Amino acid sequence: MKKKVLFVLPSLQGGGAERVIVTLLKHLNRDIFELHLALVAKEGAYLSDVPDDIPIYDLGVKRVRYALFSMLRIIWKLKPDIVFSTLGHLNIALIMLKPLMPINTGIIVREANTVTQFIQYNSSPRIWTWFYRIFYKYADLIVCQSEDMKKDLVENFLVPEYKAIRIYNPVDFAAVSKLASSGQNPFSRCSSFPNIIAIGRLDFQKGYDRLLRAMPHLLKEYPNAKLWVLGEGKLELELRKLAKELGLTEHVEFVGFQKNPYLWLKHADLFVLASYYEGLPNVLLEAIACGCPICVFDHPGGTREVLNLLGLTDRLITDNKELYQYLDSHRFEGFDQLNNLFGIEKIVKQYESCFLDLISK
Image 1 (cartoon, rainbow, N blue to C red):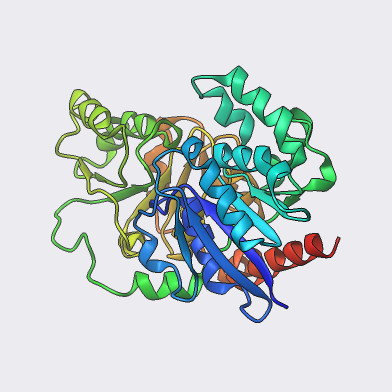
Image 2: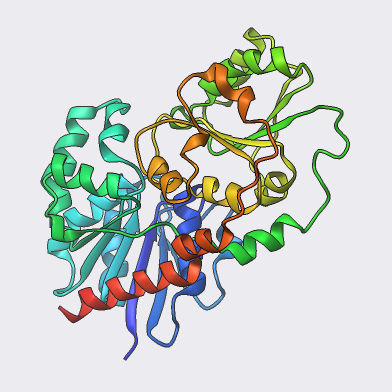
């Protein structure tokens, strides 16, 4: 019989965690697994990307706390071998519900951030620390995106080392390459040079404030430079205000969420990741795959680990005045290495193995 896996997500809004799950849903072996998807709210830019053979269950609420009964009802209806979730607050909610689930239901949670850093910048750090330390160890398996994240959970949040496994995020490089060539150069009508892009939701974690503060230094060297911000979020008005205060109104363009950011990456002169912390940023891997020169503000998480594996630690900066130095013709050429580490086929097989290993116990 096929093994039944229920994926649970808050929504399919345009974030990295959501994109990872959709990628897995597309590529997991249908001969082995029967896949289902439950959404706290059935909404988001990636809804249309979910394969047609996967049933979607809409829990019909806006907050995880209101979805607990509905989640239990779906779990009892389907009786999955594994319930798989990502994003910390939802992970904790499902672990708390585990005693009420059918016997032998395995719980696998995927952590999306380096937890110590996530909690540090949260409004209730003590409460979140307590939740992670009390509940996370009761998951059957915790998928970490980097060794740094795994070490953090084991050393700081009482997670047994045997329960924490490192699986890098999958990147469908064939799809990225195809999409990167599927339209016109978005900068073709612009007189600006260089064209710099940043991609991600507009919130504190992504560090757009320090990227904006780096722009005046860059403009001294490149007076016609322009920053293009691809993403949506609660800080948009605040960031627009900061850009105006810094005199950057003519040099920063907020273009909202873009379903095909790869077209922008292919033609940009520089991609900048300015995050204060990360788990493992897919967009960085995708930028490298598109042949876009990169620059990364150094931060905790798995980013340095990725750059070290690819021999790109020279692209890290600690001073925002250094940004202009990375506008060069450096294009990454180790695409076989990139695919061997993060390619979809390898990563999906790792997920399939961890699912089957847990079910067989």
